[in-house]
Amino acid sequence: MGDGRRHIGTAERRDRLALRQRLAGPFRAGSPEEVAGSLVALHGTDPATVHLAVGARLADAAKTVGGTERALYEDGTLVRMHGMRHTVFVFPTELTAVVHASTGLTVAAKERATLLKNMAEAGAPDAAWLTQVEESTLAVLARRGQATAAELARDEPRLKERFVYAAGKRYEGVHTVSTRLLKVLGVEGKVVRGRPLGSWTSSQFRWAPAPPHPELDPAEAQAELLRRWLATCGPATEEDLKWWTGWRVTEVRRALAAIGAEAVSLNEGTGYVVAGDAGPVAGPTEPWAALLPALDPTAMGWRQRDWYLAPELRQMLFDGSGNVGPTVWWNGRVIGGWAQRADGEIVWRVLDGEGTDSEGSGGEGIGREAEASIAAEAERLASWVGPTRVTPRFRTPLERELSA
Image (cartoon, rainbow, N blue to C red; front, side, top):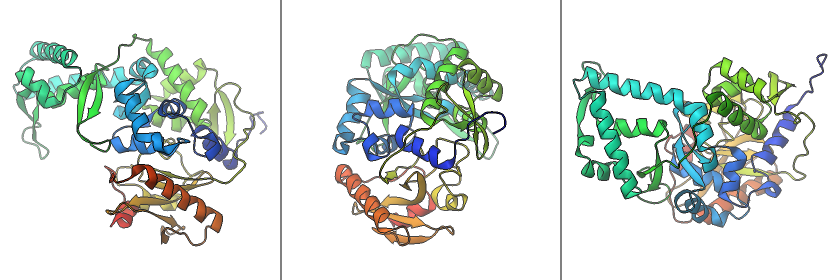
C-alpha cells in the first residue's frame, strides 16, 4: 500500500480467528472463564448458546456444563446481562462496569422513558409510583438472592399491575409492570439473569441482583471495550465496530483514537487493529474443524462476513431477522450447518454455492480429511451434550431440515 499500511488478507484473518476465537485444537481453552475472556462476550439470548459456545472451545469438553454453571451461578466469575445493541450476553464479571457504562446507559435511558410514556398513555400509575415499586422490588430481590418474576410479584403485589400498550393499534397488547420494569432494571445494570428454572437449555430464569461495580466514564469505558474486542476480533472495519457495539460512528472513531488503534488494509477497505498488532500472526499448523451453535460470537462477530462466509450460503444459515443458526467450519470459513435430531444424533451438511450439497455424517467434495475432522467434532459435541435435546431459539432453514 502506498500509504504504508500493511495488508492483512483473508488467509491471515482466518488464522487470527482460529487462534483468538479458541477454535483450533491447540488453542482451546482450559475453562469457561478463559473462553469468555478471550471472546469478550458470548451471546446469551438463547441460554443454550452459552454452553455450546463454551463447549466448542474447551480442551476438555466434558467440563462444559458443570464448569459453565459453576462460573455463572456459584463463583460468579461470569454474568449474564444486557449489553451491546440491547442484547443479552455473558461477560466476565470484571467487565460489568465497562459494558454498563459503554453501552448500557444510553439504552437504559430510552427504555425507562418509553415505559413511563406507555404507562402514562394507558392511564397507569405515574413515575413516583414506579420508583416506589422499583425500590421495593430490589429490596425483595436482595433479600431472596434470586427469584422469578412471579416470586417477586408475590412479595411486591404492585408488580402485577397491568396496562394496555398501544391501544387501538394492530399490535395492541396488555403488559404487566413486572415484565417491563425488570427489563428496564436489566438494561440499567441493576439486575441480571440468574439460574434457569430447568436445565441449561431452559429459557425460564430467575433474576438476581447485579454484581456491584463502579460507575465509569462512558468514553473511557467505550475505549476499553473497543480495545478488548479489537484484540480478539481485529482487524475489523469501522462498519464492523459500529454494528457490534451499537454506537454512533462518532463514538467509534473517538474510541479508536483513544486506544491508538492502527489502520491496516483489508480486502473490504480500511480496517483497524490494536496498537502493535499489525504484524503477521502464526496460525494453526494443522487443519481444523468446528461446530459452532446458533448465535455463536464468531459467526456473528462482524458486520462484513464475506471473508469467512460465502453470501450464497446465508439464506440457509440465517433466519429472517439476521440470526445465524448452527454452523460447520473448516479452516476458518463456514461451509455448512448442523443440527440435533430428536433421537440425539448430531447431523451436518456441507453446502455448495447453491446452498445444497451432502448430508448426514459425511460430506462429498470436501475431502476425506475435512470429513473426518467434522465427524470427530460431531462426536465430541454429542459426547458432552448427552441426553439433552437442544433446539435453537431462532430456527433457520437448514437447521429445520436437518433436525426433521
